[in-house]
Amino acid sequence: MVRPFTTATASGKDITVNALNAGIGTYNYYVQYINKDGKNTVSQVLTIVVATPTTTGVDTYRVDFNNATVDTTVKEGNLDTSATTDNKNITANLYGVSGGVDDELVSSTYNSGKKSNLYC
Amino acid sequence: MMNLYLQLIIVGKKVTYTVKKADGTVIFGYTGNATNPATDTSATVKTNAAINVDNQTVSSSTDLADVQGYTLNISVVSGGACKTKNLDAGSYTVIARYDGKIYTSNFVVTDSQGKASVEFTPEFTASNVLKLSDGNGSVKDALVNAIKEVNYNGNKLSGSALYNAIRKVEGTINNVAGVNGDITTATFTGQQNFTVTKLVVEIAVPDTSVTTNVEVDLPNTVITIQ
Image 1 (cartoon, helix red, strand yellow):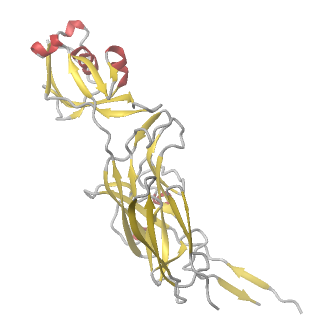
Image 2 (cartoon, one colour):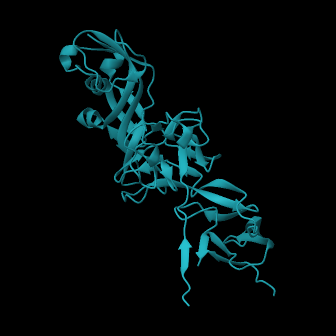
C-alpha cells in the first residue's frame, strides 16, 4: 500500500504541514513569498522529515519545551494588554525517544511504553 | 468457562526537576548532584514562586516530593495590568533526573526593555546636597526631592507619583554595612552620604494599557544629606 504524502496549507503568515499517516521519508517544500508588488521577497526550502519509532522501545529521553526562547519585553505587540492571559510561560516535559523520534510523553501512566497484562 | 482478564497498569516513575542559571545557581528544584535524588539522604530543594512541577506547592527546603512529577511550569512574565518579569534575561538549564539518568536542555529569556531617563532639579545639581530638615528623612524622599522627573518614552513621573512608583533602590550608605545593597526603605537620622547605583520604577508603557518595572538610567549619583 502506498502511504499518502504530507499536505501543506497556508493561512496568513502560517504554513501548516500535516504529516498524519504520511509515509516515512523526507519531504521538501519550496516556499516563496510574493509581495503586493509582485516581487519575490522570500524563497526558502522547508524540509519535513517523517520517521517512526523503532519497535524495540525507548532509547533515551529528552527535555521538551513549548517555548525555548521567550522575549519578556513589555511593549506594543508583545505583552501589551491587561489580560492576565497575555503573559509568558514555559512548560517542560520529558519525552521518551525511540529511533530518534519522540515516542511518548513521560506521565503518570507512562512505564517505558510498556504495560503488563495478566491473563487467567 | 469464565475468562478472567486483569490489566495491571504500573504507575510511572516521576521526574525530578532542577532549574539553573547560566552561572550554575539553582533557582528551583533539587539542589544536589545525585543521579537518583531518592538516594540523597540530605536532599534539599530551592523554592521559587514562579516555578512549580505539576502545579504542586513546595512547602519547605526539604520538600523533595513536590519538585518531582511530570510537567515543569515556569511563569516568565506574570500579572495583569502590571507585568512582572520573574526571570532575568539569560540562558537557563533544565535538568531532569529520571530512572537513574540525567537529561538536560536550555531555554533563553531575552529582554530589550529600554531604560527611563532622569533629570535632576537645578538646585540639587548645583550642590548634590539636601537638607534633612527639608523632608529628606529617607532614601525615597531624598530621591524624589533630587529628581525633577523620570521619563520613559514620554511617560513622566515626579513628586508623589514618583515616590509611589519607586520599586527598588540599590546603593551604598556611608557608615552602613553593605555595598550596593537594597536601600529602598532606608531612613536617616543625621548627616549621611549615599550612592545610588540602581533605581527601578513602575511606569506605564507607551501605546499599551499596562505598566512594568523599568530601570532608570542613572549617572553616578552621590547624595549628601545634611
